[in-house]
Structure formats: C-alpha cells, structure tokens
Length: 403
Image 1: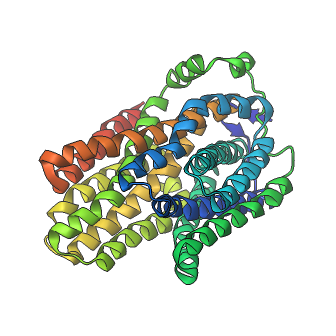
Image 2: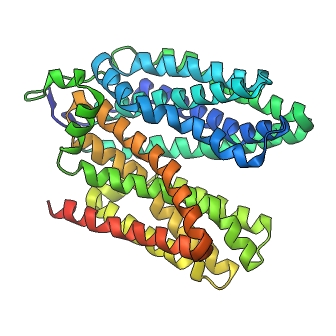
C-alpha cells in the first residue's frame, strides 16, 4: 500500500541501496576526475585559457536542454534502465576523453559526460525517493549525498595523484583514463540493482497522463505544486553559492595575502564539514522538522558567507568556512526530500530533473553575473551579495514552514 508521498511503513535499505550508494560514489569520483583534468587537457592542446568557460559549459548545456524530457522518461519507464544507460555513457565519455586528441572530440565527450551525469542523478535520486517514506527519506538522502560528497573529494585527489605521478601530457591522459575506468565499474553495479526497485507506484489521484506532458507543460506542472518553487529556489542559490566560494576564495586569499595551501585548506574544510553534517540529517529532522531545519541551515550559511570577507584573520575565515560548510551541506539533501515529498511518485522524476536543471542553470549564470559584479564591487562585494541572497531564501523557507 502506498500514499502520495511514498511507501507506508519504514522500509529498510537492503542490498539495492548499497549498490546504489556504490554507483553514486563511483559516478561522482569519475566526474570529479574528469572535470578538472579536461581543463588541463584542453590547455595542453594549445587552446587559450579564455575558452575554458566554453568547454566547461558543455558539461551543463546539454542537460539544460534535455533534462525535463529525461525526467518524464524516468517517471514513465522507471529509473533502472536509465541508471544502466547513464553508466555506459559515462564509461564511454570517460575513456573517450583520455583517448581523443582533437578539440571537437573532447568537447563532444565532455557534453556526453554531462548528459550521462544527469541521467544517473535523476535515476538514482528518483529511486531513493520512490523507495522511501516520510520517516526515512531525509536519512536516505543524507546518506546518498554523503557518499556523493566523498566521491567529489576523491575524484580531484585521484586525478591529481595520477597526473602528477606520470607527469606531462601523458599524466593528464592517464588520469582521464583512470576516471573512465572508474566509470566502467559503474556498469555492473547499476545492473546489479533489482529491476523493480524505484519504479513509480500508482496512487489514488495521481494523473497518469502527466507523464506524457511536453517539457513546458511538465515544468508548469512541477512549478504549480505548492512549495516546489521555494525548494527549487533554495537549491539554485545554494549550489551557486558553493561554486562562488570555490571560484572566488582564491581571489580573496590573494587580496589578504593567504598562501595557496591556506586557501586549499579552507576549501577542503568547507567540503569536509558539508560531508560530516549529512551523516546525522535524519536525527536532526526527527527532532526539528525538515522545513525548520532547512530554514536554520539557510540562515546560518548565509550569515557565514557574509562574515567570510569580514574575517580579519585566517583562523576566523576557517571558522566561517566550517560553519558555512556544515549548514550548506544540509541544504541539498533537505531540498531533495522536500521536492520528493511534495510530488506524487509518478511525477518525481520530472520534479527532480527540474531541480537538477535549475542547479545547472545556477552554475552557468550566477558565476557569470558574479564576474561582472566583481569588476566594480570586488571579491568581498560578490561574497556579500551571494551571502545575502542565501539569507533572502530564508523568507521562502519560512513561508513554507508556516504553510
């Protein structure tokens, strides 16, 4: 028996959940190897650094175009086949990035990598949502994003060690091939997930015909669901804030005279804090409530980001980054759970794909806008505005809490 929000009872994460976590770990590790190494590979081919933004955009542009359609297909046919297809595409793109020597081929493979990543994210997140109930969904998404964070940290580390160990052009190629090999391991793990896991369950009042809606209609349907616009806005701002911190902290460090190692330590501290906070998210939601916890996380992270450029010393900046990391780490799994619990099982793929597409849009547009702002407001001004934007989303969350 099911409800509009998932299964009744408290399902236990069996072997499928272990397989899914393993797939998520390998996907994020593989992509974590590929993204920085592609930049080095492009520079080795003699392309100007000014074109790196164009190359980076290839990872996000294709998912922006087809993301909603992918979500409709996942709702209609179930997520497992898309996990398998995504794993195969990721393996092909990862190995292709290491083997190809022409710019056009590398850009095509990087676009395929972005599409494969989208397929895997929509499929795995939909699986978690459809196999959870209201009592378990926050905890399971917490574990899911915890494992993803580990992969995001392991990927650049593995890529750097391989590239540095081999050295030169061969080092970059070797790192990309290792990333592709990690992606190859995803395929049998994705196949190992039982076929019935994650399929949407029909519930009373669930509109079956919505699965065939056109992309624009699908977006309109998702946005018309009470509360979803707020969750998408929070997710959009939070993911963009993490990117802004990654891009502009080195600039702030240069202004303050901090070493490269010190800035790297600040970024690692933020990532590690985000990873740690996700472990206990189920316990916190049980005591505070999902929306209230999200409000507190948004409020604390916004204040920490605003305080960062005001920090007068490196230790003070470290405190601000750790606090920001702890709070920002809660926001992503909480918004995933928010989206999933506000939609019916047969619409979750679409809703989650809209969420991911909004995140990608934020990763493309917000850094570009920040670059324009930095010209007259400086690095401190950019961080202050972004932190204020995070604080402003707290109003949206507060209204949802009241609702």
